[in-house]
Image (cartoon, rainbow, N blue to C red; front, top):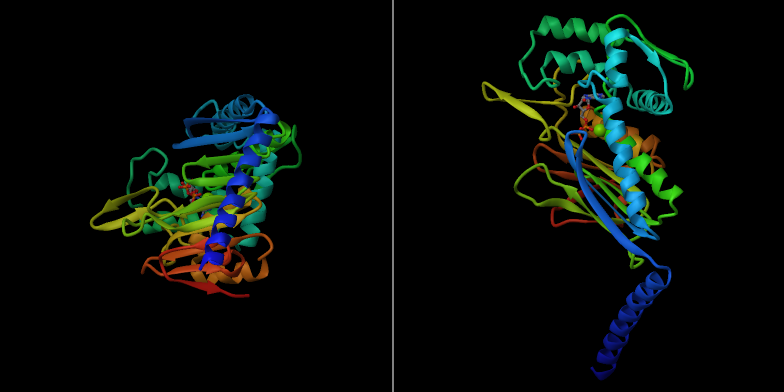
Length: 343
Ligand code: ADP
Ligand code: MG
C-alpha cells in the first residue's frame, strides 16, 4: 500500500516537473501564445499559435485567409472565381493552380463524387443566393449531362484557365482545407512549431501543445444526442468534417442539404450524417470529407483500403452508428460504441 502511494506521488512529481521544465524553456525562449478570431468563408474561425512573436504570424494567417476568401468567392464580382465563371476564362495564379490540381486529384480518387463543376447544380437549388427551391427533375438531368462533359483546361500559374461552355466551378468543398494549408505554410515560415487552426470546426493541429502533449480535437456531432462524436489526440493532422446538417432547407417535410451527388444532381443520400477525415494534407482532407459523404460507408471504406496512407475517416451514419478506420483507433476515444474498419 505504502509502496503504491510512493509510486503515485513519484508519478505526479514527474508530471509536474515535466510541465515546469516545458514552461521554463518556453520563458527562456521568449515564447508566448497569441490567438485571434474572425469571420471568413461563411464561418467563424480562430487561430492560435505559440512561439517567438506569435502575433505577427497569426495576423499574417488571418490576412491570408481573408484574401483567399475574396479570391475564391463565387458571389463576389471582384473575385477570380467569379470572373472565371462569368467569362469562362481568367489568368491562373498559384492558389488557383494548386486548387485545380487538388480538386482533380480528389475527383479521380473519388471516382467523380468530388467535382467542383457541380456549381451550376448548386445554383439551381438556390444554395448560392439562399433562395432555395427544389428544381425539376428534367432540369437536373440536363445539368448532370452537362457536368459529365464539363472541362477545365489550364497549365501553369500566369497562363490562362478556360472553362468549356456552360461550366462553372466552386471551391466551397475544398477552400477551408486549403486555407488551413496556407496557414500551416505561414506558420512554418515564421518558425512556429505549435499552432491550432480552427476554421468553423475544421481543425488543423500543428506540432504539439505548448506543454509538449498531443492536441485533443473534438469530432463534431451532427445531432443533439451527443456533444461530440469523440476526441482525437494527435499532432500535425487536419481533422475536417462534412455534414448535411451544416447547410440545408426544408420543403414539404423533406430536408435538402448542400452536398450534391454529381451522378444524380440531388443532395447525396448515402446514409451519412457526417464524415470526418483525418489526414496530413488539409486540402485533400476537405475534398475527401465532401466526397466520402457522397459515396457512403461502403464506397468510403473501399477508397480508404486502397489509400490508407493518405487519410483515415470517422463515419457517422443516419441511424446513429459510428465507424472509424484502423489508423485512428489508438488515438480516438468516445462514449459512443464504434466499429473499427480494418484493411
Ligand atoms: P462545409 O463547407 O459545410 O464545411 P463541405 O466541405 O462538405 O462542407 O463543402 C460543401 C460545399 O462544397 C458546398 O456548399 C458546395 O459549395 C460544394 N459541393 C457540394 N457538393 C459537392 C461535390 N459533390 N463536389 C465538390 N464540391 C461540392
Ligand atoms: Mg469538404
